[in-house]
Length: 151
Image (cartoon, rainbow, N blue to C red; front, top):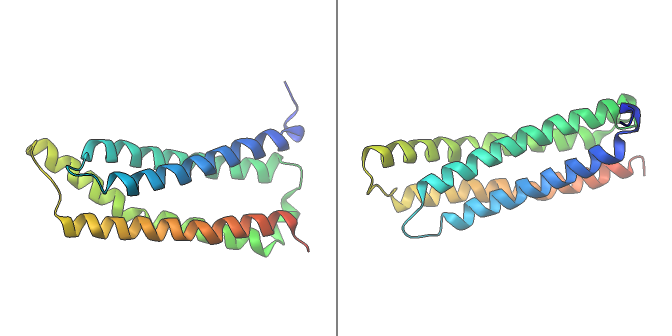
């Protein structure tokens, strides 16, 4: 077993795989919201995957800071690290409304198997997922800048 101090490359690979999985699942939610009829249960399960992947991205990211080799001082002084964390927080905040709607839709589906959300509600959730997707752009840009800092 590798010593934790040499876990940097392994953690980096895992971190990147999780981030790409997170992006794919967010895009998958947007695609599923175009379907008619809407598969509310599938959306709920996919959204749970988004939450799980986001938690793992955070855990592995913290592990990279601790055991990744660059050391806390690199991150502490890196403005792009803090910008990336802020955008990650914004994405998490933007995900609250879709998650709450998916939970409500699944409850409504349990009560009425024929339930379908109102088109306006679906459009609102798609907008929030669009915001999440757009916020991924600065997140990825900050991640690239963070790795190359100081320029």
